[in-house]
Structures are given as structure tokens and as C-alpha cells.
Image (cartoon, rainbow, N blue to C red; front, side):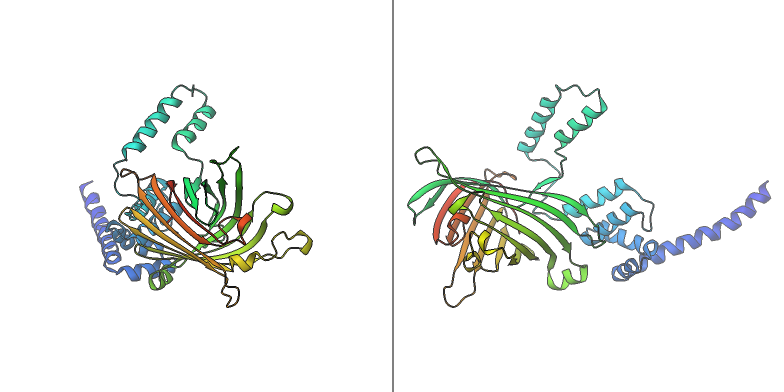
Length: 372
């Protein structure tokens, strides 16, 4: 028996040494070579070096490792490890996740939720599953544009003060359907202008903007060279839900590019108005005032966010446009609630006044701020 064991070990040791040499050689390759191997679908050879880079904090490598674990590319499929590395990728953004310690207001909110739903009988599996969705807030619905409530929106041109508020949400419908890591998303934004300080407090105007779009992240090489993060294409409806002479609506095909240089974010948006029949068009000259696109620049400085939005019809004669300045700063160091100041001057703040130049200074609270 001893002789047989020795013979077995003689065969085993060379195999072990060969396996060790392969692992070491894989780690000796540089990261650029590992990326080439990944693109050539030689995942098993690429995995060790990419994992090594991911552990050093390389955001791109962390994402690739998560993707490989999720799909079993060069490594055994492991959803838990995939989720771990996806989370690590997100945590690289210091302006989104600062540390693992939760803010006091979030802890209080979760404690309140847990207490409220502890009263529900969850002995039935279906009931338990539904309650868990509520407690974890796992609906797949996310903020889109900024959500805010501005109790003071003063217009020197109209000499009146009203309330303005906005609700903006998005829902991811499908991811990677075409194999480009693209996102197919539905979004809805509603902005209301409320004459709350006038007699009988009527709503002056509400604008509704549903849209459907596909967002395609750029390849890593293009991202590194140009800082272009993604390209988005979609269709957008914009109307005020009124009838008769006060009816306003139009539909657009929209192309958007997203760029980032450290704490500076740029969104360039161009659109084409879908033509309507003359008898159905209640604002035939709207492009004259909104133009064919807009530029949005945002700058994140520590906890404060500054923004500027510019539109112009680019006409020498009858030049029309608009400019908006935004400023967000946390309320008492909150990570979810902000003081919000807004200055707007020009055409198109609301659809009902798209052909009237208006200046408005607004102040209030934002519950979410978008960086693009």
C-alpha cells in the first residue's frame, strides 16, 4: 500500500506544480493583456488578473468580475459573488456612497417601516413576499429628474408668487436585450404650477412628460479617451392635459449624450419634432421657442451641486432661448433632502407660456437631485 501511495504522489506532484505555474503565469500578465483575453472570450485566462485588479479598487475590473460571476464566464457561476462585486463597483463613487454606516434618518425610517409592518400576519408565503417588497422598497422604480417642492416661486415679470413642484420617476424595463449592456427604460415627469396664494387657489398649469428610451453605455476605450459615458435615444411626449385654446402638446425623437470629467457632468440633448396634421397642431411654432436641443452642465463640489441649463433656437433673426441656474445643498447634513434654489429666464418654463418670456426665482426643498 505504501509503494502505491508513493507512486500516486509522484504523479500528483507534477500535476500540482503545473497548475501552480498556470496560475502564476496568469497573474504575471498585465491588466491590458487580461482585457484583450477577455474580449477574445478567453475568460479563464483573464479572470485571475482582472480579479487581482478588482481587489485593488479598479472599478472597471470589479464590474467585469461581477459580470463573469453572474454569467459563469471563466469561473463557476455565483450570484452572491456577482452581487458583491456589483456593489463594490457602485461604492467606488464616493459622491453616492460615502461609507457603510447609515445616516440616522435612514435608520429611523427603516425602524418605522419594520414596526409598522410587524403588525401584519406573514404566515402565508405570498403575504410575506409582498411585505418584504414594501419593507425593502424593492419595486424597481427609481428617481429620474430632480423631485422637489418649491413653496416660493416668484416671477418679477408677472408680479406673482406661486408653488411649483415636480415628481419624476423611471422604471427599467429590460437590460442587455441586444447584447450591448443597454437599458430600456420608461420614465414619467410631472411638473405643476399652483396658484396656492390666489383666491380659490387654482392650479395654473401641469405638464406631463412620459418617455421611452434606450441607453447604451460606451465601450471602455471610448470612455477613457473621450469621457463619453453613454448614448441615449428615445421618444418623448410633452403636454399639459388641457383642452381648447389652452391645449399644448408635442412629440419628439430625442438623442442624448452623457459626459463626465471627475466632478463635472455634461448632458447634450438634441431632438426632432414628430410632425402633426395642421388641424391637430395646437402649438405649430413651438420649435421656434424651444429650439432643437439643450445643454445641461452640473458641478458637484463637496456636498453642493450647481447646475446650468441652456436652450436656444440658434436663429439670428427672432433669436429665442432660455437659461436656468440650479443650486442644491444638504439640509442639516442630510444625504436625501436638500435646500433647492432655482433661477429661470426665457421661454418654455411651462407649456402654456412656451411663447412668453418669463423670469422666475424659486426656493424650496428637493428630495432627489440628478447629476445629469
